Image (tube, rainbow, N blue to C red):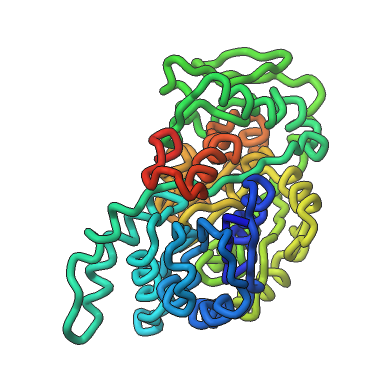
Amino acid sequence: MSVLLLEAFYGGSHKQLVDLLKQSVEDCVSFTLPAKKWHWRARTSALYFMQAVPASSSYRVLFTSSVLNLAELVALRPDLAHLKKVLYFHENQLVYPVRKSQERDFQYGYNQILSCLVADVVAFNSSFNMESFLSSISTFMKTMPDHRPKDLDRLIRPKCRVLHFPIRFPDVTRFLPAHKRLRHSVRCDDIHVQAAQSHIQTTGPSSCPDLTIDSEPPENIVNVAGMQQSLNPMSVTPHQETVGNQPVSRPCDDQRENLRPLHIVWPHRWEHDKNPQLFFQTLLKLKERQLSFEVSVLGETFADVPDIFSEAKEQLVDHIQHWGFMPSKEDYLKALCQADVVVSTAKHEFFGVAMLEAVHCGCYPLCPKALVYPEIFPATYLYSTPEQLCKRLQDFCKRPQLVRQHVIQVNISAFSWDTLGDGFRSLLRADGDMMLTEEHIS
C-alpha cells in the first residue's frame, strides 16, 4: 500500500472522507481511532499511531487530518519523514469557539501550527477555514509570554490550498415526497455527468443551480440564477410558467402537500458550537405565536449534551417528527427528504456537510451570514440576525408553499466527488505536483 491514511478522530466528516478515499483511490491503507474523547486524541494519537502503523517500504504518501500532531508522529517514526505528508483541515483550533477565552487550550492550536510546518501540503476544506487559520497565527502566538516566533504564517502559506470536502451524493429520488419528486428534473448522477461533460467551472455560490425545484421565490427575492447570463437552470416541469424571469410551476396534484405544516430539520452535532440555544429559542417563539410546524432534530451526540436539548424536547413534544441521531444513512436521508427547511444556527462552521446533504434532499437552507456559508450559499439563503431567522421561518410556516415550490439555487455538484475526485487523487500521488491545478482549487 502506497497511501497511508491516518485519522485520529474517525467520526462524522472525518470518517466520511477516509471512507471515500479508501473506496475511490487505489492502494490505500488506513489506521484510525474512534471518535471519542477528542481532546485526548489530539494530545496522544501520535503515540498510538507510532505503535499501530507497521513499518513498510511501500508507503509513499501520508494523509492525515489536523487532529493528529504530525510533528510528534514524524519525530517518533523517522521512517515516515521522507513520505509526502498531506495535512487536511476539517476545522482549525485558532478560531474554534469556546465558551470563555480562558478556556482555550493553547496546545491544540500550537499542535496544528507545528503540523503545518512539518507537512509538505496543507489542504483546507474551505477558503474561510484557510484564511481564518493563517490570519490568526500571529495573534495566537502572542499569547506566549516571551521569545515568540515570527512570520510563521509566511512559512506555512505557500504550502496551503483549498480543496473542498468531497461528498458522494446518492440518488434519493425514491425517498422524495410527491411534491419534490415531481420537480426533481434529473437524477443527481445525471447532473454530475452533465456538469463534467460541459466543463463548467465553479468557484462560488453564484454558479448554475444543481438541484432545481420549480417555484416562486420567497418574499419576492430576485432569483440568483438570473446573474448567470449563459447558464439556465436544468428544469423540466409540467404546467410551468414564468413570472418575473422566475420559473413557477402550477402543479395540479400536490395542493394537499401545502396544507401540511412546515417541516424544519436541524441535522447538526449536539454541541454548544452549533448554537442549539438559538434554534430552540426560535422554535419556541413560533410556538408562542401559535404557528403550525414540525421539527426533526438529528445529528450526532457525544458525552456532554447541552441541557437545552432535553428542555426543548419537553416543550416541543407536540411538534417533533424525529429526535436523535440516526445510525442508518438511509433513514437519515429519508428524514431529510421529508423536511422542507434545513436550518443552521452555528457559531462555528468551516464547511457544513449536513447542510449540503439536506439541500441535495430538496430542503431550503437558512444559514448565518457568516463563517463559511457565504462561500457556499447565495445571499437568498443567509440571515444576519436571530430576528431575521425567526421572520423567515414565520413566513414559511404561514405559507409553506414558498419553500416547497422554490428553485433552490445552490450548485451542490461543485462539492461532489465527481468534481473534486481528481484533485484528491493528485494530492495522494507521490509524484504529483505539490501545487494542485486551478481546476480543483477555489
